[in-house]
Length: 92
Image (cartoon, rainbow, N blue to C red):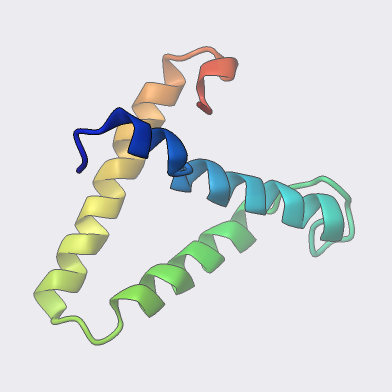
């Protein structure tokens, strides 16, 4: 990671880009049930699962398991963080 704060300011937050892409997708296409601006968590979970599988395809089994374990750990960590934060603090 760079010690230069200017370079970090130029680099967009991946979390925010992904969240914005999901918001934009559902604003434009709605959910599979046809509701506009309704986010379908099952569809998002499936899409994220497919993405992780694609990104880790070809990795050795222990590396893939470590990635899955890391993902589950991050979900738990942020779930706890978001549970204790006001809604406006959830995105940065």
